[in-house]
Amino acid sequence: MTAAPGPVPFDLETLGAGLVFAQSLPGLLRVLADERVAVVQAPPGTGKTTLVPPAAANLLALRAAPDDDRSGGTAGPAPAGGRGTGRPPLK
Image (cartoon, rainbow, N blue to C red; front, side):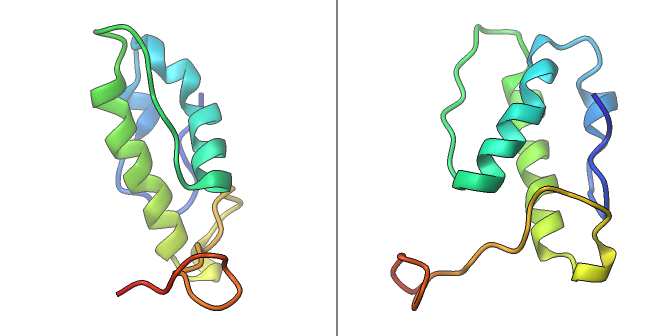
């Protein structure tokens, strides 16, 4: 597993050292980038609470970064909702 590229607040490689769930982070990040929602289920003690919130924060940081600050992350800016997104406008 490698650290997320770009301006991210958490080093997931360090946080995930020795945690079983760290193996699932690339797949989770892909799903979150594509679908913006995921259900995480794993046995107790595998690292869900330790890794999922920082991974989500990193993904949001990548989405919020200006295009020139991104260095190849898989997450692009998320539509806020409204016309053309299939979602109602955010209030």
